[in-house]
Length: 357
Image (cartoon, rainbow, N blue to C red; front, top):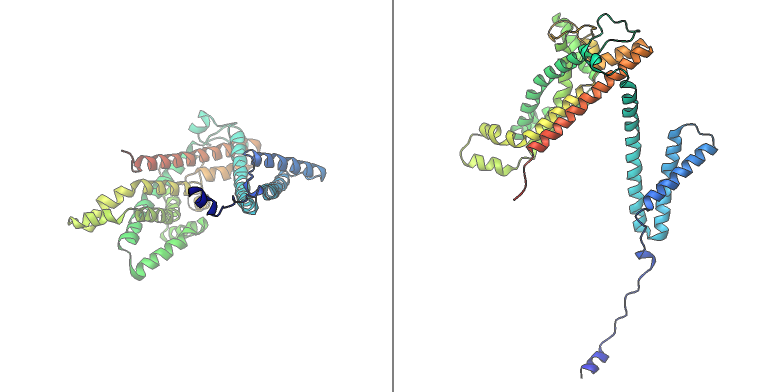
């Protein structure tokens, strides 16, 4: 009887598989496409007499996208081909963004390392003519550290308190106005901040000093601190606030003891990134600090120099010795910004909540 039931049951035919839809490109296919594209780009560029290596690279990038899409469409299917097309475009954009950066770093290191030594970092340009070798960047390094430090002391508390107001208390038209002006200040040119402080300096009869430059840098730094701190405070769970308020703790104390300590890692990272953003500004320093060849450790009196101003000053001289000093100062500035970013990442990891059993 079981045999009769089995004979009576309808037999289902195995599903038909399309052989092309289950074929896959090998793992080395993208590398092969890249090699073929580079060979085609170099060959076409050489045959047509194109001298720019950038043009060769653009031709190779176009061939890489086209070859990836055509080969995937033929071997696999249209859906996989579209996915491969999007991936290829992402890789091409990544390479187009990284190559100029690597080229800039390579040129800066190769040219700046010529005169970058202990003497260069510990001496100023006092008594050294711009067209002769020698001299150093010590006075500019001191000026940058002092000006950036003063700008941080001014902008960090203002930015933190503004962000706390917007997240914890801000409601109504005042909060909208503050948010609007913070957005406007985010895109303000540095020369505008310098002209604003310059007008105040002329009206009040103040002399150029590192403090004036620090105030202009603080104007540029405040919106960055506000935005980064605001986003970090929004990430603090509301349950922490509600639990503290349920215990009868005043709101100001909840903010001071619960909210800010929870987000202090992200806040510190935002402040460090804001410092890195203003460290390379030149226009406010040219207007308000005037530059100096001597070491001035007092930012409240007298002209000072800074690394960006020193780079511009040396490059303007226009000979081989000044070019070497300018590239070495640029390398010092890049190292300074890189150290700040590494410190910010280290603080963020150190303050990140530990997960584990």
